[in-house]
Length: 253
Ligand SMILES: Cc1cc2nc3c(=O)[nH]c(=O)nc-3n(C[C@H](O)[C@H](O)[C@H](O)COP(=O)(O)OP(=O)(O)OC[C@H]3O[C@@H](n4cnc5c(N)ncnc54)[C@H](O)[C@@H]3O)c2cc1C
Image (cartoon, rainbow, N blue to C red; front, top):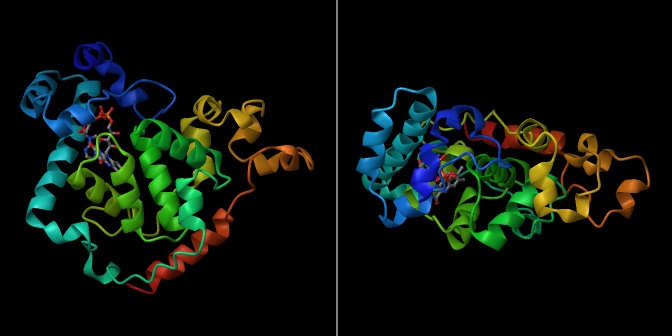
């Protein structure tokens, strides 16, 4: 059913796949994880469709296979950074940061909305997995392995190869990873991929009444209004956290 439904939407996948408020991706990951759908059948279908949507989707199936291959050949990457120089990175793990992230209390609406959806449903859009993982590691300065274990305990589609590979990608410690000096800005990611705040309002009803221009960063509301919200101030300043992250990674180069 899911697969037949997705086939009617696959042509738009490449343009809509990054917007968590839309039902634009296949939702097939748990079926692939547990083998209730054949990866070979899906690859055959995608290869026979030359459209941009199907080709972009095929690339995602290939990422899955890549991470399976990686785990098979490098089982140590479950516990160790693939890039040896970053394995001993001295993660500060500041007290309270990991708990605030898991409990959706960081004060960054896109992060908290995603963490709330994950805790309530066991599902999470790929863009939001990247944003929350990057935030834990590069804004909150927590070891990526803690985040990997938390996702493992929450995700319905948990797959060790995909989870470890993607966490290492986000932490810049893996193969073909996001470069360590590239950091997601949680506010601009939110403005770009949830422009009118539809996704945030769905999971954080306490922010539902905030105008779109402030919903990505409620602390920008006029003085007094932010204080009246039932929502915490930002746990860290992104600019300062970013500078500390760059210094941390530079120390291990
Ligand atoms: C930090 C982090 C952790 C992740 N943990 C998991 C996990 O435990 N299990 C899991 O299946 N995926 C994981 N992913 C990859 C991806 O987020 C999910 O596969 C995707 O969101 C599932 O939704 P979908 O089926 O609608 O995907 P679609 O966009 O429809 O993609 C089709 C299929 O391709 C595969 N796929 C897509 N993106 C990726 C990717 N980046 N890496 C590997 N395979 C991919 C999945 O099997 C997916 O079902 C993770 C990504 C990140 C950034």
